[in-house]
Image 1: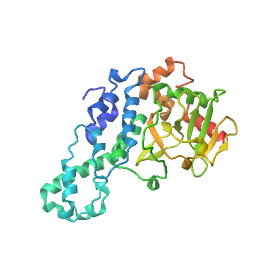
Image 2: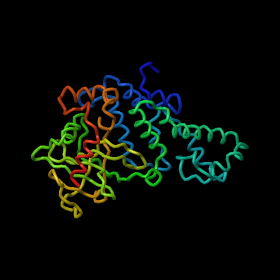
Image 3: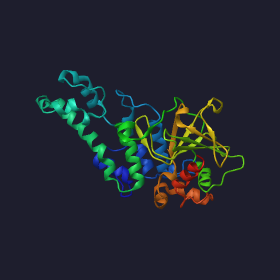
Length: 322
């Protein structure tokens, strides 16, 4: 591992399991990912994670483990296949470390050393994964660690007091180019095109959850204003989503107070599609470090205050529409 390895790459190497070659290359900012289209390796890594997040967390499938470098699933398959023989109630390979039935019988399993050894290996991995975010010092590393943890060990909305949104079955035709922040940065400073509209999707308490821009670049492009849960994964505020709906079918909507557009209950929307993190997901003082060439693109292209604009400014604009 190189001396310049990204903190996330080092943490998984040291505390859990090495990340896949593709994710490692991206997080280590290989020049092939620092392009005008991709932005930077960190941004591209969040796009890759989004591809996984948009799919349901299947209890008996191992697709999510492809995030790691050739993770051997034979152990997990053995645990699931032989669990009944050891009177274990296992409905999934996920959350083994929290399974009460398993923990109550763990000492008895020592009598079957082969099975016990395989089980201990997987328990150690899941326990380590659950704690890995605590080892991260960098803000941007904490975000990635949480996404990966939840992909393997999905969370519920009740235990985390977070709004759960449904994922769309199919990806909408909305891009996630590095310049998507362009219009949201302008909106944060109350600069909205005459033809532009913003829709505010609110939670059950009437608080802003997403902001959608219309007639400004790609339509139906949204930014999250609060963390949300999708398919068991906690996605931070400042994330880019696309949304697909028929505006004519929205009965529950009211006009904004200031800009053109509507306030809409999030429950009226059938689904969302997570695209990537935006630079607004990270504090202004850490953006240049986190997003490197992507952030520099924003500066070079004259985007509106990419280094000082805070997500709270967008939230304030959203609140003013209520």
